[in-house]
Length: 340
Image 1 (tube, rainbow, N blue to C red):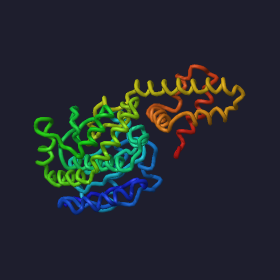
Image 2: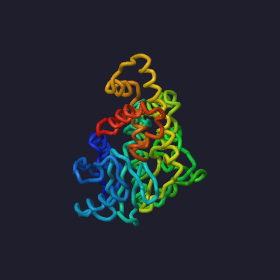
Image 3: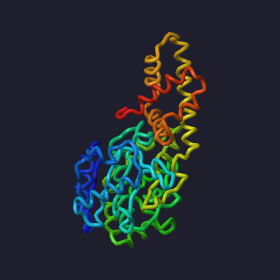
Image 4: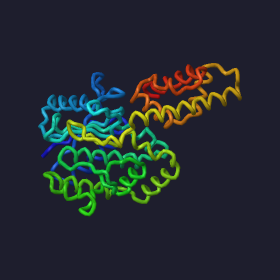
């Protein structure tokens, strides 16, 4: 019986305690445990950005330190950006290794999707919990089966997600594994060694969903954020295995990062021009405060995400009027600080 040890972020520790109570009594193949949140300074999962190889290597060493077996899964939830430098990829949702890969049965999930415009503006705790548990099941599938994600979108756990509507469909379907008339994930998972227990977990978690409430939440989110439908691209890639099997179309590439920064620079310059008209004697700190007050949290997160994937000076080339550059950089520098 493999052990599944969850290393939570401290914000979601209680949610995973409840998760363990459900999953341990409903299947016989896995024994789930909850570890205390990571607080070691040297740990890569306390950094704002880390490469998936660095994280999985760290988790593998932690497994050895705890005398865990090769097929015991150590799953970490990380409030930072996961990169895959060997493939030129950034902003992954989830990275993991199979039992046969280097760093066997380790996985990490980035929590950045919660704050990068996907679940933030129409924030709801039950929807957020629902999304977190989806990713935990995806980590199980990645560790204990050889079933790969597919481009087609059926609402299946193994869909790639390029659009917000696809991600919402996955949540609405509720731990769905697609049929033989689609990509055949249900039968492929079921035939795996621990597949029946994974399917049982999907069934139990699906039954715990308040579907009517979930439908209302997602519908409100879609209607209220029509302009944000592509922000799922911040991290909708599963890097399963040592070679980071991922689809380049599911991440922000360099041109998309540039577009984000270009749009951000235009918006900041527009705000500063407005302030000049209303308060021509405003000081630099007042201008910075104005930018902070007039931009949303999701706007700030999108800008900092694009900068972290390029460089902190990348905004320079898009500030067309030099008189705004110093103020814009001062504001953005504040957004890059931990806790901002």
